[in-house]
Length: 161
Picture 1: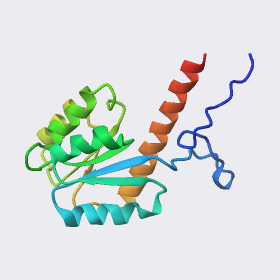
Picture 2: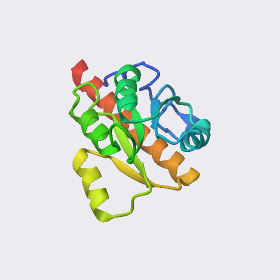
Picture 3: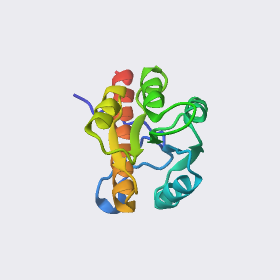
Picture 4: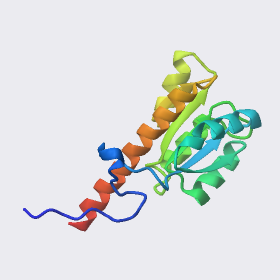
């Protein structure tokens, strides 16, 4: 069986970084959603080391508008926000055919089991608790973006057959 060539789009190409064969996340898009400007700025600063494009939103309604316009690969989503909660935003993202593959990480100060269960029911992919640890945030975002890129590559390969 002949080898299929991989897509050449830079956002989904495999890169051999230092010979480690890591998936290249350059060009991926991250949407940071939090109604607290200091939290947003902190998360943006933490993500500076990653080769990603970052957009922000100040509440749930703004998050949906940004998601539809920006088409993020990953959303870091606060739960407790005015106008529309993170739970509602996550559910809307996962129900939208154009956004459903977007990775959603809930970032919350909530610690109740019921809150985590509700997030899972809404389609959340992962959780981070506040205050956010820089290493944990960067590691999870990098890892989940790699999964997102690999999934996109697989879909492209299937379509090419």
